[in-house]
Structure formats: C-alpha cells, structure tokens
Length: 195
Ligand code: ITT
Image (cartoon, protein in one colour):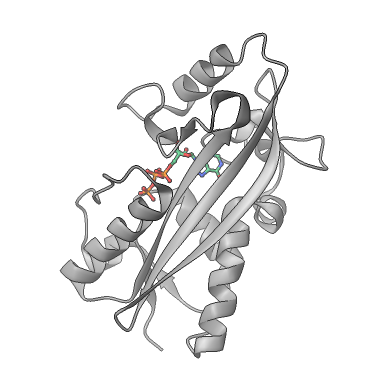
C-alpha cells in the first residue's frame, strides 16, 4: 500500500501522528515528496484550513494525503484564539508570546474552561473526508512542564491535574484532540483497506 502524506510543516504533529499510527500504516512528511513551500491557510475555520492544505498537496503532488488544523478555544474569550491560535500574538508564531498574551487576556477571569479542537482533512482516491477530535480542559495561571508544544504548558485536560506538557507523548495522545481525530482516521483507513 503506498504511504499517505501528512501535509504539515509542523514536525511535532508528525511525531505525534507517528507514535499514534505506528504499525497501522505508513505516513510520510512533506520533505519526502519534495514539498518545501508553506501551505495555504486562508480560511476562517479549522475545517476550511485543513481542506485547503490537503487540496494543495493533492493538486500539486498527486498524492493521497491528510492535513489537520488545530485551535485552542477559550470559553471566556468567545472561542478565541481558535483558528488564529498559531498567530495569536503576531506573525512570528511564537508559543511563549502566544501563551503570555492568552494569560494576560484571562487575568482576573474565573472561567478558565477551554478546549482543543482538531479537524483532519483526508483526500483518498480523489474523495474528501473530515474527522474531528476534541479535548476539554482548563487554562491554568502559570506554565508547567517541558514536553509537548504550543499551548501545552498551560492546558490541563479534564480529569487530570497535570498539563499536556507534563505528560509523555503516549499519554497525551491517548486523550488529546489530535489523538482522538487520528484514532478516527486510523479506524477509517483500516476499514477502507489502507491499514
Ligand atoms: P501546520 O503546518 O500543520 O499548519 P501549524 O504549526 O501551523 O502546522 P496549526 O495552524 O494547526 O499548526 O497550529 C495552531 C496553533 O495551535 C499553534 O500555535 C500550535 O502551537 C497550537 N497547537 C496545535 N496543536 C497543539 C497541541 O497539541 N498542544 C498545544 N498547542 C497546540
């Protein structure tokens, strides 16, 4: 079975996906198909961006592929930063600056409810499919942990007292937004006969 391209420029996402999909089917990164350009992400929704990235790779490289877009949706901020999570504090996509801005916007706010939401878009044999994964949790007041990436040091998933950054990748994957979306993708691919 030919490998499926994971259309992302984010090496952390590839690492998490590989850990989750190990043994099920082979995924390869954009580097391996010679795609080094930045993928377009111009939609105001996670679904739209995920589809845009996957369509770009499918059209330019004629490969079966999937991409994903993830946002952190904070209840007290009406769902912000959401689809704009990567550039919340500016175009530099700086995780430290993004967390700093989020914590300052939540200063004095009691409602710390938030969720990560991932949408995966898959293009397989020319057909488009989407899969969603959500994890609910809380934004804490100070950063904790050195693992993970992005907003992980300030996010504590529901039912836990540690942040995603304090968990090994397997533990995060088992309950995370991306882990849940990837589990749906994996089940679909196995059913489809690609796994
Ligand atoms: P792509 O090439 O796949 O687009 P990206 O890094 O641009 O990679 P996103 O647009 O999906 O990815 O990133 C949205 C933001 O959310 C970005 O700031 C990430 O650091 C953050 N983020 C995504 N997944 C996360 C996770 O599992 N834990 C913490 N933060 C995460």
